[in-house]
Image (tube, rainbow, N blue to C red; front, side, top):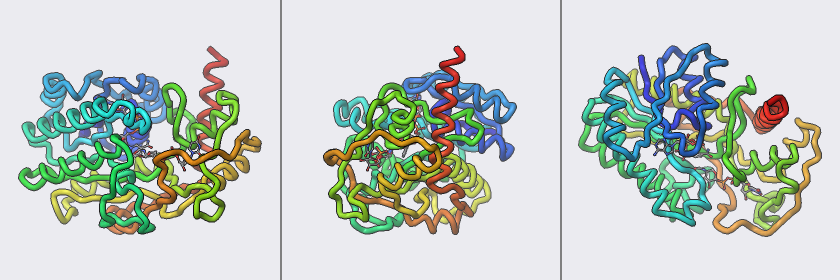
Length: 342
Ligand code: NAD
Ligand code: WQD
């Protein structure tokens, strides 16, 4: 069975392709490489022994997107990862985000409809909940005020899929990721942030390796157990596995409606300082950090209730914060070794 993965050259897409292949699926990828290279495809081939074809196509271009679907009309489903995801960039250039993330989704849905593709899985984000106080968040927790245009594209993307699902036969699953971190245990694929990273874990590993001289913990006076923000860090291979399970759930017709939503988190809240401590413990590196002011727009605390994904998809996150840090560190070290050997 063949699956079309959009954004397959990116961080979560690449890990999901590995999981799909390991579970017997054939995969084709569509990625314009606007935020990636084809480097992770080489890693996928080393891990799985399979060469994955990527169509270098911008999904905002309907004609090109249509041509890919036309050539792959035998697919059993689409997993739609492709999007821009940098929160501060979306604040600075909202139209870029609305255009890229929503036009690409609408074009994918047009092709899904035209070619009668039965199944769709969509990457959403816990950022759709906004600054909620109801913790842990369940899927029914009301959608909050979006804290950025990026988050708004995810809220709107979900609504577009829900409206589409009311009048079309496609079975859809929306997956709301909490904070995906870590890398494949092989050290062959991982996150490749272009430019300076904003997310905590790449900031930690790049500080430890010396690419960033010193990092700042944003906020020390929050009403949390140590004053820093709380997040639900979920390993990328656990996230990847959930996509295969979601697709299988749809293929087995276990879904109760045309469009179902699942939280993907561990259910455990971890503070920034606890994450740093976990990193220092597994790496033996003393991190150079300072406590700084709050980062505007940061949610104080958020973590998932993941019971629905556990019960219905049979998904069980396997990896805790220390192994998240261990694999992220292994990946950072492998990137340095690659540079040194070139
Ligand atoms: P990523 O940037 O590593 O991968 C996204 C890929 O999509 C990139 O390779 C990029 O080149 C491609 N892309 C973007 N726009 C495109 C377009 N118009 N046409 C074709 N390709 C395009 O990001 P990721 O971390 O793998 O995220 C995957 C998805 O998960 C995104 O939708 C993101 O919003 C969502 N998500 C990510 C996180 C996270 O923290 N990483 C959290 C929640 C949700
Ligand atoms: C985590 C914690 C920071 C960097 C973002 C998006 C969200 C989702 C995941 C896509 C926060 C703190 C960070 C640093 C720090 N992405 N931090 N120093 O903000 O939870 O979520 O990524 O959907 O939509 O908003 O993730 O990794 O940026 O931050 O202290 O240098 O680490 O303040 O508390 P966030 P993050």
